[in-house]
Length: 202
Image (tube, rainbow, N blue to C red; front, side):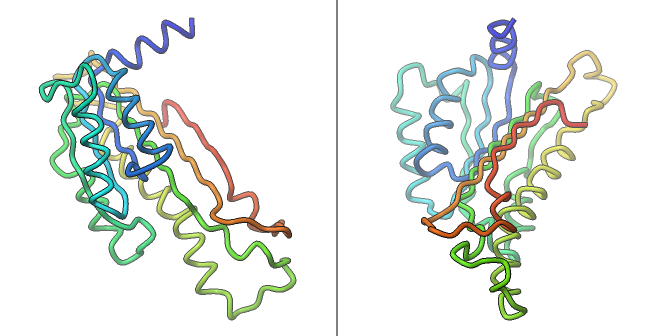
């Protein structure tokens, strides 16, 4: 049954948005997608550094089995943690997408998110920490929420009547990891370290 499900996932024409795609696990996921998806794959890759994104593209195009007819790639350099820039970045990520064509829409959001100064205990925080807490929560919670919302809005569960016999599958994977180390975890912010995998969002 698991094998049958995997085959279904990788056989459908797919839109895949991967953040943090310029290095480490993000780059590895993108390269694996390029190998596994058998039909049309439209990759949208974003990270802070365009040169590193270009290196990811180079690794894909040099791999065995790569075809520009099967795989198209769009790069959107940007900082998802930059609150003023986020609306523009979101528009660029999904600009020009024909949601009726794809049968599978995937978002993999990989954020090296800060969870605040977790060398502090909760009792040590004060109003002076509001700006830094706001920034931490924006990158760890707000930006992933808005990315997910944009994907679900771009790929609605109900298609136009011409495509009613081709249901779309939507998959959202959120991977957050803490930067740096600590000897004294903060019990208030620690739950923000998470891996959320969600299928078939409504």
